[in-house]
Length: 343
Ligand code: ISE
Figure (cartoon, rainbow, N blue to C red):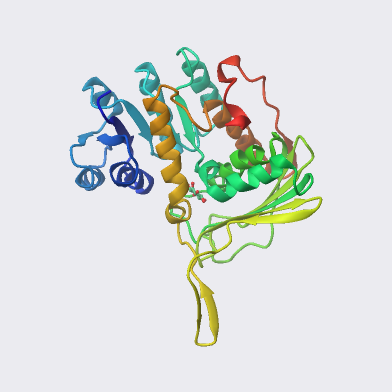
């Protein structure tokens, strides 16, 4: 590694392009060494924002050329596995956007592959863990200052979704975040998942039956409800209310400039996760870069966490058809002993 970590950003869609700017402009200790993107237009646009970066269409070629010290995978979930395999073979540190892979069988394959290395090399991009309000809520729960946590009420609302968004993605692309952050907040794994279908939003694309209400029971008895909506039109909102024995706590409320004008009170709302979680993404990538540079390689959710989330997603997808679906995790391999809910 030279003075700066050369990151290969794989996928230059919305999230990949966002990470390129982040690495070049907002964090320290790293630069974009390569953009790996088969779409020539996207690749050219990303390279234009990352001076010195080389463009490749395959991650194998970037590795072969010695152009990268680490990779950040920002392709859609179904395309993670073909990048994870060669990156692990090359023993490169990896920050992989969520989900680790789209199903438990391939997630398990990744765990087995990674365990052939000397230590965990994969961090999974569950950025909510790096959001200051989520961290404060976790601290409040851990201290017990408001008594025991009883319930968590979560709101996860998107203004709209792209044409490629399918019904199961309500779980695997969206509620996937709650499946990671809720056990991390509450210090307890998921025991079961149930999905309820309220009245359908007629503004949703025809193929989607949403919103959905996801009920997550944790091993410690805490009950969590997640309103998952993807056609709310008005903006992007991720918020939660924690109900304790002696109080409640809220995170994710609208903030910033408040205005009283024309007999109205208003405050801005986000329209995308790229702004709602911008600071969390910055912290996540900075801490990952620092961890890679000082040899820890991972500072946050690891591949084991990614696997646990895949188990919950599998249960959640089944639960879309009705019933309460249990989640049972195998014993965590010693290899991952320092990660998990603690990080
Ligand atoms: C998207 O892929 C994300 O990861 C966002 O955080 C989430 O809010 C959205 O629903 C997903 O589609």
